[in-house]
Length: 261
Length: 378
Image (cartoon, one colour):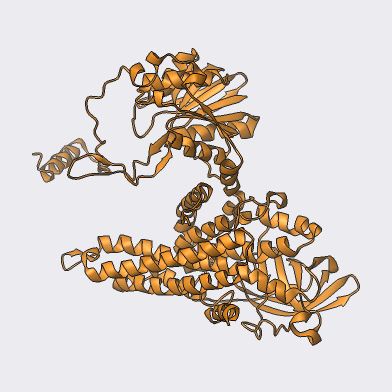
């Protein structure tokens, strides 16, 4: 079985601070990490490898420094890694990104593609399903559980109001959420092997024979009007076992305390 | 001269830091309070290969190097000095001498399970009357056919009752003095090998520190480590490496105390502003950080000397001498900046200050380090 896992290098948004003067993100000195949903996807692939045997390829599109997340993926247990990188890919929106990644995946002919649900620096959740559309394979997003069943994959998808049980025939794509699993640690020997002995395969535009109009800024119909950090929601207060009247009273008091009323 | 870590060392450090924060720190206070050996943590470390970091893959290890191992001891000790010394004693004092001096058969039989983490190691040199003067060994090993018969007692043995494989020193020929000392690999469960009292200690209280007793304990001749009569120099070489481990433990303790203090002085308000806004606090933090960083450079330099197979005896002694003093000073300053709260067991710096002191004592006191350093100069 061949599994391709898409991993993205993202700034650790827990460490990002806002410049109080300008209201913009201070990216300087912010560590880069493997996107958490992607890491859950990688762990799912590694578990399939442990259980039924699989060759796991970590795939990333990004600047040369994105190499670090691919080395991390190999230190966790991925067999090989591939970096899709080219100046011509810069400025890509989700469509151009998924076009490019799909072209790379096509060269690998995997049985299963796993991506994270969404990246914490963009939060679009579009790239995974778009890749599946480009490849013409079925996809299931928001996977909280997956199970191989012959030449099909059973997926439990978590949505706000419902859980979907979906059966996909291979080859297929799933997008992973953090609840899928607890990703394993790297091992020290895995880290050394990943940096000192393993090679990363590099694919550029020339290797993928992509049309200029389909990639990078030119292949990106999205126009960003405004970007802003997500406001942190406070934890909130839960009150239980109240009668309807008591509940109404509690809400009114809370709103008064906040000077909303 | 580039003072940055390689990318593989940087990523290893990130791994050790994550592991320490998630798996080790939550237990640190409890194992100190209960004087409990953190067996569950050792099992987790074993599964991830932490018990064989610098050991070649051919012997069940991870095939990394001395610096990667040192980074692990530092990051563990930053949150829990007990966990740091468990790993340090196992790796530096048990795995290392078997790798350096063991026969191929001994490496396969003893080093492989140690490096894989299936077994835990310990080192037994110190005796009631042989501390800094390790040459005064009273434990005897008398050759009898195909075995040696050990009689005597060892004290203050780290990983004491928890280990499976022990490197034990004994006199095989008293007339020859230090040239009559030999090293043996002794397995737990060998008839005649029992445990005495558990030490009640000031710090590193989760570490299992025991007396080992040998009464007509018969050890196969195949377990003689190195040559007969070469045990003293084997012990001294082993301790050179162990000192880098303890220096890294001291460094981690000091860094941990600095971490806690920086967080505290930003929160704690007196006279209407955070302690961090007072110049006294700022200057204390600056001095603490400078000591930590100076210690770090000495420790990493010693580790790299060992990793690149250069002489490292003086480097290790300097690293341990300086880092242990830094740990004692920095943890004391940390408690002072925490005020009354810092003196209570509700705050980690109290434990760190107790843990720091041992780094000036074990695996060669600070006085021994000065002897080693000056001996190379004069």
